[in-house]
Every structure is written in C-alpha cells, then in structure tokens.
Length: 128
Image (tube, rainbow, N blue to C red; front, side):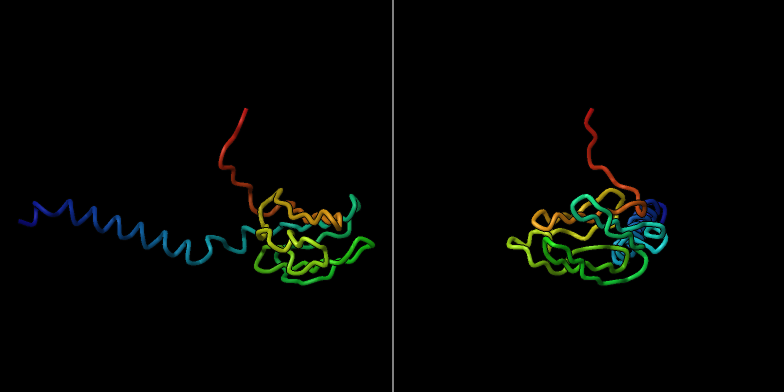
C-alpha cells in the first residue's frame, strides 16, 4: 500500500514546500536591503538637479521651488510624494518607486523624481 501512494506524498510535500517558500518571499515584501543598496533618488526641478539622496536611508523632505512645494519621502528603499500643493495632485497618487529608471513627476511644479541604480528594472514585454 505504501508503494502505491509514495510518489503522491512526495509530490504533495514538494508542492507544500514550494508554496511555503513563495509565501515567505511575498510576505517579506519580496525585497531585501541588498536590492536597494547603491540606489539613488535624483530630484530635478525644471531640468536642473536639485539633489541626490540614497534610497537606503529613510528621509522626508520638502522640495520647494518658484513653481510650488512637494513633500518627498524615502522609506524602506522606496520614494514617493506624500503631499503637493499643485491643483491636480496626481503625483501623490503615483506608486512608490525603487527600480532603476522609474519616475514620478509633478508637471505643474516641473518636478521629476528618478531612481538611478538600485534594483534592476523588470520588463514585462520587449518590442523591436
């Protein structure tokens, strides 16, 4: 009887082990500190460099220019806009950025947040 179900039990154990490993990976956020080390947040206003800030240091700053003011936060290796005084506030709703080349922009304030370095960009499709 054991021989009949042996392969089924081995397959079930392998599937459960794979599910447990995947669950732990996604539960932990799928990221670790090594992935964000070396990544920098580059802030430009009207094409001029405002500053560069490391993604591995949590920080909140107010970026002010003649166009307006934005509050930018860096937390857990990700950057995002928490507050803006522009009329549409689209930049507040943009997702957090952490991968090389990702951008958040506030067009009324001519503000661009760009990640340089850090995690490698993952492409979902390539066109030729």
